[in-house]
Image 1 (cartoon, rainbow over the protein chains, first blue to last red):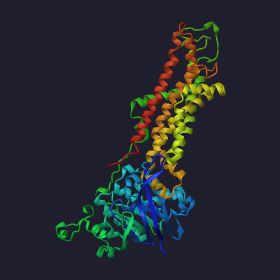
Image 2 (image 1 turned 90 degrees about the vertical axis):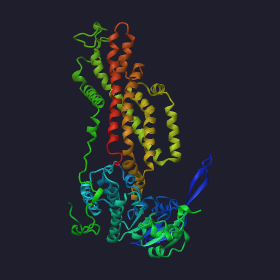
Image 3 (image 1 turned 120 degrees about the vertical axis):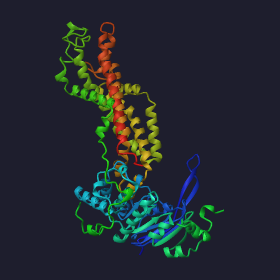
Image 4 (image 1 turned 60 degrees about the horizontal axis):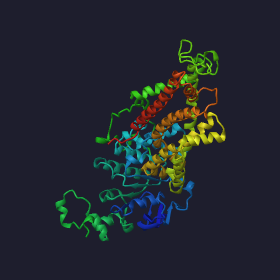
Length: 277
Length: 311
């Protein structure tokens, strides 16, 4: 059985309301999306902006309540879970956000931020939590000397490492990565991505990797889910998708990957997404 | 550093794959931030205000030791005497020592300020965070109630409450506190709405924090700096409100001295003893001013440190 099973999930946001507050305009962010994620696997969700990728990631954690559909995590019905059960579930499914500058509380020290999951979900003593958060920081390549620092004192790459340490604290089975490197400098991206890969190998983590950069997907993902306008267009292993994309949309998406030597690639370039008539 | 454990997440340090990050990401020399206290004390106006308030607190606490006379002791033979060696600030229409009354009056003023501000803070802050965090109908409802309260003239409401509940400083301050509640509510609500949609709030929910913890640990600290300013300004307002009510005879009960009741005495003896009006008037003015400056200084310091990005 899969670790995460998302079936036929739909979500629309109201964009307009009349003077009585009734919804009169909708945007269908996600339309009938289904997928599964196995333990230890990395499933990339790709698509252009507005395709509903991030919404899918958040729905999986029930940070956004879907309109319909079912979500099963490790055999538990996530949508039916009550507040208490949901919080217990969240020990095992964590999230890493796009912008590390805003995903950490500016008034909480790095040490407290990393120890917070332990404080919330376990009854470990203060010293024990401190010891463990120091070890977690070491694990993501930051020294324990950062424990007393505030987020404003760290760089984006360092902060994303902190966010990863925080997500790891409870030994989760799955992490939803919402464009985890998109907000980082190119020079730091590879480091953070490598860290994520190593952690996945060592700890057997499953990633739901929301990403618009196909070059990254090829490196990190096992399987790919291609989304467009809220729907799944194509699904397959990285090899399948990159070698023989079936859908025209996927082909266009792939051709939008920047290449190191554009002249060589010009010949087989297809109309890119933005140039669509 | 710390001993490594058997946990698979922390492999032997020998083969730790991810070393210290090189390049621009590494930052061996971490700058130390100046403490909150130091940045508060950097502004001279804040220091002067803080010293003044501290002195005032000391005077209020040590009133029995400092006052040369009993503030309620009457000596009708020396009524309305001007400042002299025996009575530095003169005597009032019952022959009571003005300096002693001024010193004891500081107790009433500070205590009144604390009561009123306390009431407003305890009511306004949680309701404001609640309205901002929960939103929807609760937000609309609470905001409307607070708007209605704000539209009521504070002294008129205070007079009504005192008339219903009876005189005395506690009732009067309860009324003032109630009237000041919307200030705390609005600032807390605005601050909460401001951070409500920050990613770190979503992150704390994703982490499994309870709503209570999210509100108290993540929203509240980010709402506090402007609240500190409101506290301070409210203390000033409450001090002057107490003076107004006591001046009208609705605050302290005679013969308890308060700056407001001293002003009242002074005003009715204006032509005979014009010197009586200055000490309480100046003290009220300075106290309100000091609270305002102190609040502003603390808020500036809190905003400067610990927030903002390093870009």
